[in-house]
Structures are given as structure tokens and as C-alpha cells.
Image 1: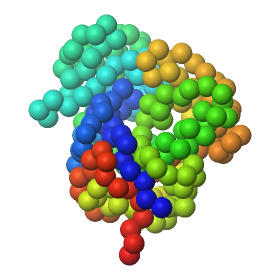
Image 2 (image 1 turned 90 degrees about the horizontal axis):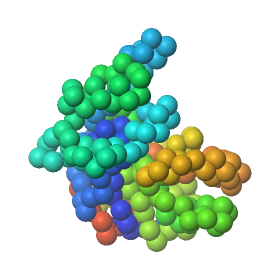
Image 3 (image 1 turned 60 degrees about the vertical axis):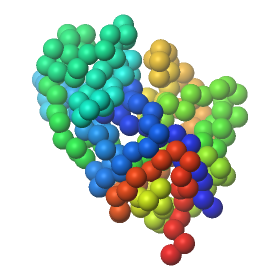
Image 4 (image 1 turned 45 degrees about the vertical axis):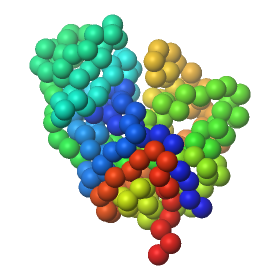
Length: 227
């Protein structure tokens, strides 16, 4: 069964809020510019590890976007600033950590470079939880419409098309506490993770690697290749 690309999201800085796109090149390292930049923690007990929104949910209140090849970040106060040493220093002060910026395309992912979420699975979780759930909690690159709730699980180990790109579905995405945080307010709803654990083994979405680069756009078909 084939779905449709309903939304495309790119997150230039790992763990910050991202940007919604109409289309995007999907390269071997994932969506162009996705999670290319990350904050490296130099605090003694975490030296060399990435600072993510698991450690500090406030990162989610910074919105990163690519503009002419450069990253611009809208801060919680609404100010637009370049991603530079001054902004990193301000983040370091705010989080009480020693931070450095890392620019490495393809190396800042938790797993594989493209995350796909079936919107029918989100709707099923909403039904189980009895509340509306903002899909941005799941930080996917591609949100798909027109599928059955667990259709994406049938794609494991198979190749799928997304626009003229081709992806291999590698594994389910096991979720963490990040989905319990509202993407705008960071307010916690811990019951969401408990419900997801009960209904879907704590998983939402599938990880994919890129087997053929190409461009995907909203409205494109996404699903298994016929051959």
C-alpha cells in the first residue's frame, strides 16, 4: 500500500525545532542540511557527548532554519540570530554547560538518517490517549497520509520510494521522554510514553537509510517499489 507525503521537516540543528518544507533533496546523508549541526557537551561528566533535548528540553524552543546555506535560529524571545559562537555561548550560559558547535553532515543522527512517521499511527495514539497530539512531538522527516495505522511496519527490510528518492526501511523507532514534551511549551505529559509503551512497544515511526538520492515533495507517493 502506498501513502502520500503530507509534511516534510528538516532540523538543521539537532534537538532544536525544525522547519517545514514543500520539498527537499534527500542525499545519502539524509535530507539536505538535516541535523548537520549539533551541540557537543564539554561538561566533565558528559565530555564529548551531544547535548540533546533529552538532557535539556529548552533546546526545543529554539527554531532553526537554513537560509542561503547558513543557519538562522529564532530564539524563545522571537529574535532571529545566526548560528555562531555568540549564540553557542548564550546557550552554554543558559544550560550551565560547556558547549561547542559541531558541523558534520550524516553523523548526528540517533540511528539512520531518515525518519518516517505514519499519521494514522499518530491518530491511533490520539484515540488511545483520548487527547489531541501534536505530530511535531515525533520529529519525523516525512509524515505520511493515506495508510493503515501499522502499514509502515510491513515495509521493514524493504525499499520504498519517496518522490524520486529510494529508502530502505531499517528498523522501528523506539521513543524516549522527548515525545512527552509539548514542542512549543515543553510542558510534560508523561502518560503519552506509558500509553505508547502499552500500545506499540514504545515505538512510533520507522528509520530508513538512503539507497538512491533524490527529491521528495509534499504530495508525492511514498511506499514500496513494485520491483
